[in-house]
Length: 486
Image (cartoon, rainbow, N blue to C red; front, side, top):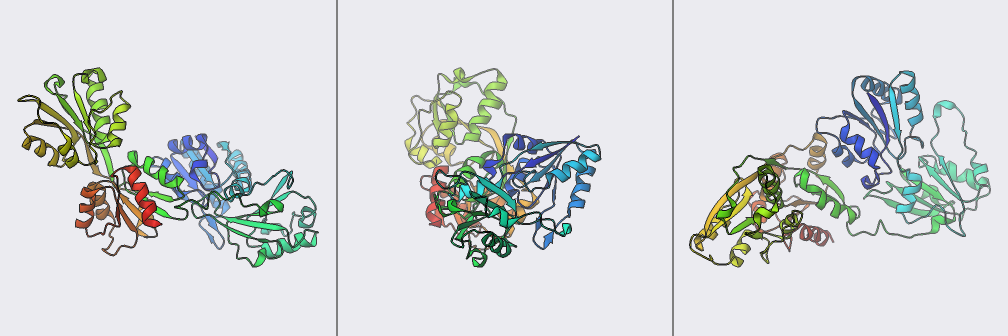
């Protein structure tokens, strides 16, 4: 039984350390604060206990004594307790205090450092905290000391004389006093200042001013405030991305969501992963492959299920398909085949079943058989169409999609409705979403559909398709989101 004091980093979930991610995946209990990115909770097991202890100015969910007590209580009763803290737990994170309490209680603990916002937030705003010719060193200081002390340990007038770059964390509330004391210590009112709010997150924003004007510039918490010559630098890269500040809901299954979510996040979006379907294995009788001339796959899920639950479990590998011609609906399915050493012989120009029908060759001989590896309850359009063209078709269901129930925190985020777009990549994601969340016909977020079949389901469900991906791929969905929100 161990409590892990884990640094969540400054906000961007991509900056989480590998050790932190490993522990979150093993966690029985996660006690998290408001500066930890919500998506990180998705790394925890579905049945993990999630306890919010966020602190914001004027709004404290649990005071420090309560947090300490919770850490001791769960540390004694649970195998893995993760105390998830924004930034680094030992940089103004009160991690030292929590470690002291755990040590006194005889509860084992481990510290997992995180990237501090003192360096990361300026970097994401295009501000290096050190720069040749401008700053040879930097100082990090808190702007929010413990009010119970009755005194200040920070000599702002002395800091004004240290030179280099000054980074103030948690200083928004006292910025007027801080800037006045720094000027009293000798810093020029013209000294550049940049305040980076929600640094490294999709909603990051930067206020630029001078030491003499920053107090009236509307700086809000939480901000990393950079003071010094480097604050005039603006090597912008993060806030200029095309989806910066936009929030996108991704409804794919948890196993499938990462590719789309990552692509959107790289373009600046904040992604809410809202899995409305789950992929479920099913038992199936593996067919005698020598009977078939063609093997057709309609999705990457079908490829994985066929190879893992079919070939591998029956003692075969890809060599068993040597006599077959292979067709794949779409490039994603074709790419999935390459992971098993198979190059598809036929990939239709358009990535829907109807296009495969148009491009499929006529039967080479009477009675030539086709095996379709598909989802249970897949559409009949493809097998019926092939039969109408004279083929003999056997349909093999190799997996099923079932409705998934998102976590309560995910439901709350989506039901709140404060997102810019929602993506649907199959008809089942539409149907299950509408069962979970009631959105009217005039729903304001942009609805992005992967293709015509999904679009038809969107319309039938009472929603309005804002834009349909072309091509009907994940790449096309990403392009459609960017175009639709431009």
